[in-house]
Length: 494
Image (cartoon, rainbow, N blue to C red):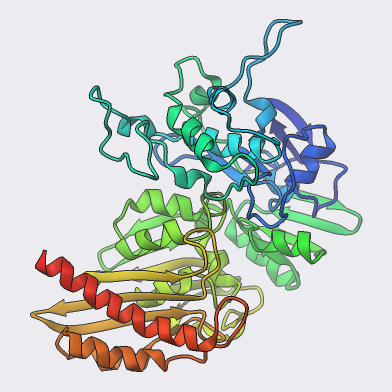
């Protein structure tokens, strides 16, 4: 990584110094202070999408992908050396004295009535533009007959995936004209500069040491350097996608004397398939994992669409989700059911800890000061019968009341092994050990499922809060196992 003498980012094609903003200043505030007021603040916690901007990131199927992120959560200093496009940067400048030419996404939003008050519109436009430029989208577009194999309520005939807009909220226009605009956009033209940019390498990570008013934001070039700093500064806050820390900064006004970014460390961004396990780097975003695995781990594939929104998944990481120790983080139940282990590393070396032994209390774990999660290891072969059931008040982009993940090996009608991960029913994510014992060695029958469901209802120590009562949570645990049995029975008989 080349060093930097002064932190700066490229915004809409113009290199812009980050100074004099404070290290905790969000990209949203940074942009607005420079007159780019199309980027709005709605919720300040990554739930409304009014702040969406596009960032050039390492691509999955092309050298560079345009990725939509929540500018309200990302520190501006974390974008040192990177390229940003806001809603203002999408239009093409015209000749002097003439109006700019609207971007195809902006044009469709305008002609199809996709904006009323306009507050949320720039965020919708940026999220829609990121999907517009997604490699492979047009490969699934409508054929000459006007139909597309993937077209349904959530996928347009042009290959547009409406989940790309799941983190954007509108309270005036309503979603039908916005959907119509999304389903009307065509393919980028050959002379589209943002489409051509995908063929070039992404911005290289840079070493950052941005200090102001006694606080510092750091990004080192290697894992070893980062671990040495963590040993010297055990009080430092470690961030990757900043989807958790950004909320703390905005809503609770938290500040840190030292923030260390690990999102671009190459040692934390590998995905390797070995003969007996799959290793997923802790700093890969959920979107990158989803697209690289492409369904190879079905239980993770079931998780991803239900994990927050695409905007959040474009930044959030498995390492961050597990590192917070939250009992309602959706990845933990799935990884528990997959019998995953964590590779923990510090300046002295590495150790491997089963995820089932990782959590020790509410937001507490065996991770020591100065220690990072380097990777998640999932053993092979995978169990063939899996399911992830998320019980929440909204179908998408919501915090779970209860999350249940199943991974079963069923052979000749008998349950050979069972792994069940639970979230939202105890101070930590837990394995459902009693229910697993009630299933293993038994026939996979309605009687077994009903008996095991009674055991599952008693697992954990569910509490009542504004999301659900303890009784409801217990009932949903049992119902989840009965649902799994019904679904697998239907699959076998069909």
